[in-house]
Image 1 (tube, one colour):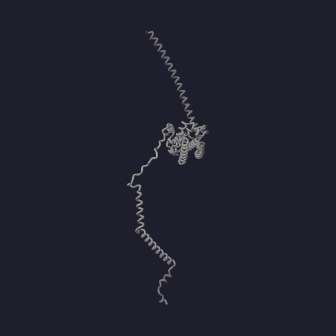
Image 2 (cartoon, rainbow, N blue to C red):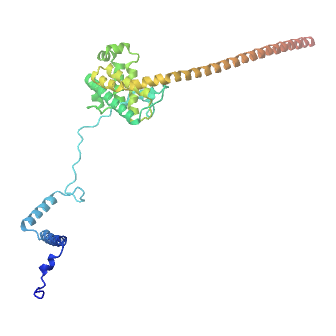
Image 3 (cartoon, rainbow, N blue to C red):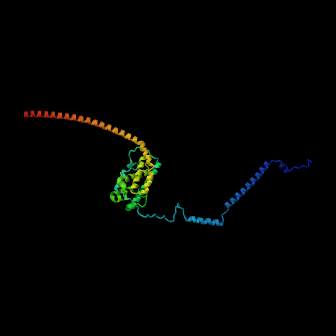
Length: 335
């Protein structure tokens, strides 16, 4: 019975675990998957390296012809010289910069300082430069737009003679000086274009305000740093007064909206540091008064010395006169 049993691979396999069978199955599947991937890559390489067809050759030829018709801008060889740029008109040099008023205003401004706004304030606290710069730049642009529109509407010949066709072509100081000149020349007509209440009752004239706001442009362009908040608020408030003068209600409201957030900062600084500044000013005044008293005492002493010197001089003169008279009598007797 036992001799009749023969060796069978199937019988041997049946003794193996199911896990081993699963491993063999997965290995066989992975091998078939790798074989398929290699065959696909081989087919892809054949497609890539295959010689182009006749239609592809014609397309490449046509595309090369098209590219050759538009030479590279960096090519050294050109078919023809580039066309010359034609100027539409001769640029106009603003005459305002040669005017005496313009030169006088420039003398009173400071390119890198505060100019008319330079003075002692209760506090020198300043805003961050990024905030300050945005405020000044915004105010400068609004003022330039307002003054240009006012001039272009009421005095178009001024803009035409200076070559100003659009907003932004003229600097703030040029526009401000142009209105100053009109104030000096045609005051009656210009006064009719201004707000009568402000023109008649303002503590500062429009001429002075135009001079002061010209400094805003210098501070914005030349990046003046550490401008006190109190001074910055004064600059914006003067800009509001100018646009109110020329009756530009829209831009006055915009400038006023910029100025209002600065007012409480300025007021609080004045309240906090104003008393300290007053005490400091009082101490300076007392020191000056003491110096004056010292000078007055020195002056009195000098007056006493002068009187004594005068008395001594008078005595010397009397003695000289007596000697002179005696010598004269002796001389007469001798003769």
